[in-house]
Length: 390
Image 1 (spheres, rainbow, N blue to C red):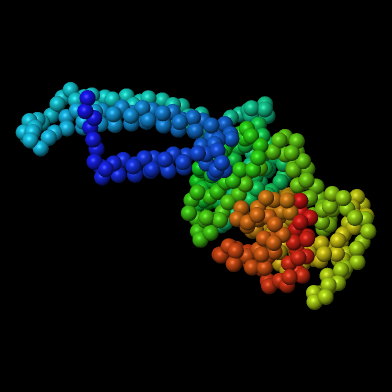
Image 2 (cartoon, rainbow, N blue to C red):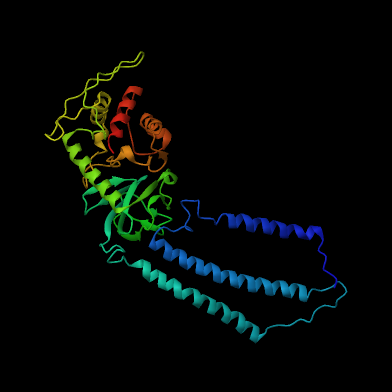
């Protein structure tokens, strides 16, 4: 049998096609990419992923059959230069019926699981997998950060959504200014967020961890830097986080920063460094009976003083109490232990926090944060104070 020999120049398109296919498939590996929808970590995302994979398998079968028939026809009926012109025909009723019925059947097969998934994801479950009622969370989109309120817990936070694993989260979303789109790729699909209109979304985290989310609607200059994290905690971790927020709120009411886990009971003298301004003396604060003996680091005390005198309190609060009227900036309760700052844009390190406090406009141009020029000593003191908000 003589094998068909293909000229080398004709192999080039096939080679490019193979390389393109490999590159495309490489982009579908979702295991190591935290924002991939191909690695679902919740029930909502699993239902959508299941529908997607069924469609992919069916499309693959159709692709193989169609392309196989095409290649078979090409090689079976390939012509030679000496062949006469083929007979010209017009219309074939049987062929037209076949290529109309087959796509209709394929669409019907896809439609059944699609409709089933739409109905399953449209309604918030009344009972979570752990037997509890869903936890309500109000989501408010701002240019360019996210606010999260827990009305049942009396807690407000920003840019970091804590949820307990196994309990359904019922999200009630609206926008403070323009249209945004709330998206947690590994937990749920996208949902637009509008001013003066509430939209709903729900999910149940099945695996603990930190999962990134983002705004998926162009909403202004810094749309690409409007990220957040979903922290899927175990029930015990979530209870600890909740208690810390409430305790932080009570301490904020006293004006006293949260003490370190192992507080130093001695009052340290302000350290004086050559060439640097000496930290100010500790300020007097109102202490409740339970915290009256807690020592305050002079630098933390200076940071707390600056927080109130430099205008920070005009936009921010360090109390997790829901909601604080007049607060237009992110709630800073727990800012000291958050994974990221600047709405998911910078890792929460001391250097990045100092960089942000020195010039937030240079980091995120157009952001609403207006802050007076601060010295290095003042920035260090503010960072020390914010680190106590854990």
